Image (cartoon, rainbow, N blue to C red; front, side, top):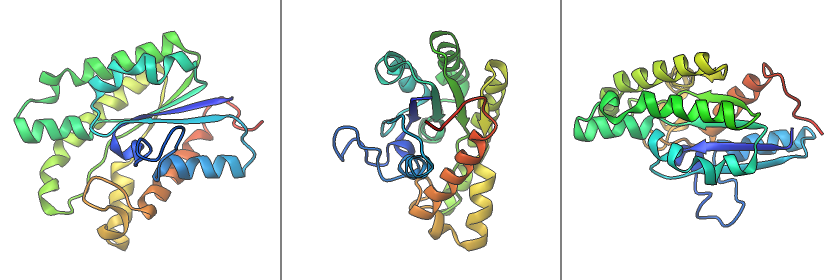
Length: 207
């Protein structure tokens, strides 16, 4: 394997677009890369996250951000902004075409690349408390993504329960900066979960 691409919203981006060309950002992508490179991985890792992206916008940019690079592994984290649209406008995930967009994203990755795919489930924290109102929609997005991953043979990595479990143990302030984005500790947790998930993929991360 020599080309890993991370797609997603601001949680994936983590300031990489502000830090210059080829930056991996300051979040979980950087921590995954550090772990893989320390373990001997010699391929290329790209952060293609964009602040504010929804499933529709990831799909719209798929050719430029991903397909033209012919990746060997693609990781997708999206859904929080889609939930935010519903909470702020009342436009449901169904009305946004979330399921169709997400399935089309996986369909194109399946048939237009040879990449293994990791679908990272969306998450939110009830910190501040008003984000508790987002949780049902986050769950809806999570279930849609889980079913789509099963349909297209992708690996699904649920994150909402794991992150919130840790946050309840050590304090939300230790894991999230604002109820959506991650602290360094939160990014490390996501990186650990991702690395563990990769163990189940039929691919080689070394060399």
